[in-house]
Length: 177
Image 1 (cartoon, rainbow, N blue to C red):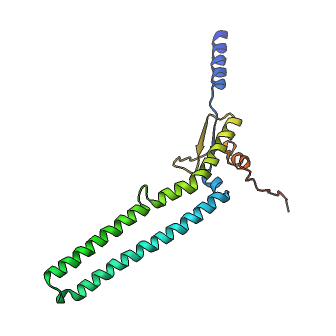
Image 2: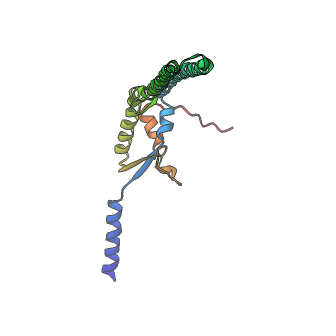
Image 3: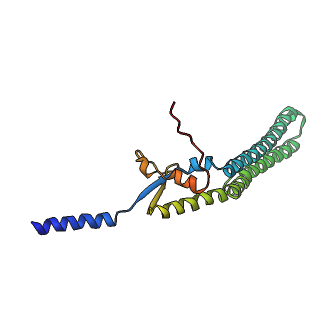
């Protein structure tokens, strides 16, 4: 019996020694506190609005060509109508290709976002790595990503440590009225 108790205690001790320590951070919250990220988002939004307006103008131009073709349809010969219709189809294709080159995968928007946001994200990931090493965490989850957490014990939230590491801690006064 004594050997069994010692064995169980030994297994329990080994389990404690090799237990992995987990933590989580909220990267969206951290990024929202970083001025560089806010500036990058503002610039991206400005660029996107400009591109959207440009594409909208191109769409309206082609729609205008279609309306004009319908209005002049009775005056045109079959060859003239087919030629202008073909031109309209080419223009639709060009506008859609341009839209894809701007907002599609590997488009201008994607590349610009990567250029502007990646350095800020890299700062956060480096800070998370430092905090994880300092707190001897084996795994750190991102609460704001695709990971779904139904319950988390706040003791494992290391978001404030990452903010502190990045120098983004606000002085919060805890005055009781």
